[in-house]
Image (tube, rainbow, N blue to C red; front, side, top):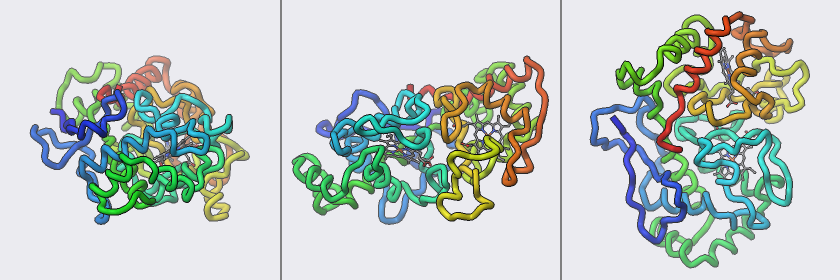
Length: 328
Ligand code: HEC
Ligand code: HEC
């Protein structure tokens, strides 16, 4: 059933005690076929275990930030499905990120990254937080001087990439590590794809029917990824403090549009939305039930509805069934 298999990392590279070195390979021992399909890596960055292990080291290394206080993992904590439980994340020198930290699980399958839905690859994305003033605040040239001085990194760069420790090595390894973070083993997966009838409670099964048939949620959050990866305006505000994709292209029809987030592991990725404005799933459901605020770009799919207390509870139980304990 489990399509994820542990990779044996070279001893020297074992860094974190959190056993997250999980990668799903196309060569699977069991006959369970992941609903997510195969991981597609760019041609110039094929996945291999040594590269993933190096990327993991970088991911947990606070030396990647200006004052050596913040690693990627500070804002993307493995135990919280690679989020941080905060409305806005803590960056260097007491600064705050401008948005809520999203999960990195299954980011391998996203055609566009960030809430603006603009950055196309994990390789390109990895440099953004490092240079962001509020997040890691690091000049990339300075960072390379720092990383080149670490003998283990120089040696790994030579061994794995046959080159000096440089931005290529850093971005390729970080991307490879993140591509290995696959989540496809939730009760919903066992029930729906694994045909294990008992994997979900009766309440969660009723909730799935509400989610996928009674309401319109799957129009933007369809299985298996629970996102279309498109950008949408869901009427969160009449006037958005953060204009979303408009920031990228100054196109007023894109104002208030944000990339649809996956709902996998939603139980542990609160607070919700790009600005962490909703603390609970109950609040989120109330938002949709109200039909959202008036905004000229609001998706016409979002319409008011009513649910009984029991139905709302079932819907939340279903959302909980998307939690994959492999990562806890
Ligand atoms: C200070 C907190 C912070 C740090 C440090 C940080 N991130 Fe993030 N990360 C965020 C926030 C906030 C977003 C959402 C930004 C946006 O969409 O505008 C994000 C978005 C992402 C995304 C896009 C995910 C998606 O669904 O589109 C990836 C991938 C990512 N981060 C990887 C990393 C990596 C790799 C590092 C380390 C090099 C890192 N992050 C460091 C807070 C952080
Ligand atoms: C028109 C597309 C669309 C539809 C339909 C839709 N959503 Fe969403 N959903 C989004 C977008 C976009 C966001 C993020 C908005 C933001 O950050 O401002 C979101 C966010 C969420 C979040 C918070 C995710 C997170 O990580 O912060 C939950 C939970 C959620 N939706 C559940 C639902 C449910 C339940 C339904 C059905 C009642 C539904 N959605 C219908 C587009 C949609």
